[in-house]
Amino acid sequence: LKPVGLKLLVDGRLVACFCQPRFASLAPAMSAKASKANKAADSINARLQLVMRSGKYQLGYKTTQKTLRQGKSKLVLIGNNCPALRKSEIEYYAMLAKTGVHHFHGDNNELGTACGRYYRVCCLSITDPGDSDIIRTLPGME
Image (cartoon, rainbow, N blue to C red; front, side):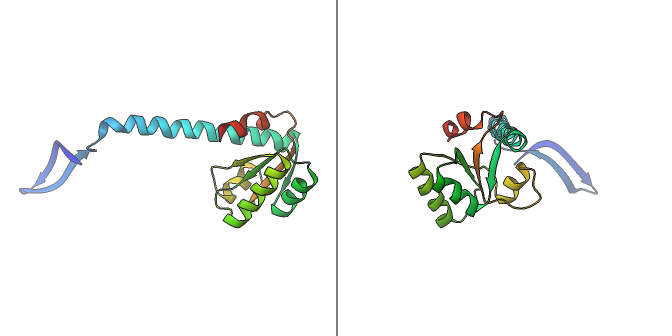
């Protein structure tokens, strides 16, 4: 931080100094990156909500495995705090089933909230997207 020049003195002692960041020129670039990431996240959440309303899906690890084994799954979403062994197993099943996998930007709490549920969702399998174009857009974003 570097001082801007606005200082508050009381009885000759420095009480407050108003400062600005040293790299103030980088702040707009970082906020532009953050806003682009937020827009992408909002887009994914909106598409996911449309699937919840008009499509067919399975929530949870076991049912996701079942749909992958049966070949019904079109897309799998995995939360970013899913255990590594579980994540690699789902990715392996998806590779065998030729199904797209999207690593969700948030943890299992945020994935559950994006699905409109009040509980945690580790992974989610979309079998019918309904009116949403989530299958065409998400695998290309990775």
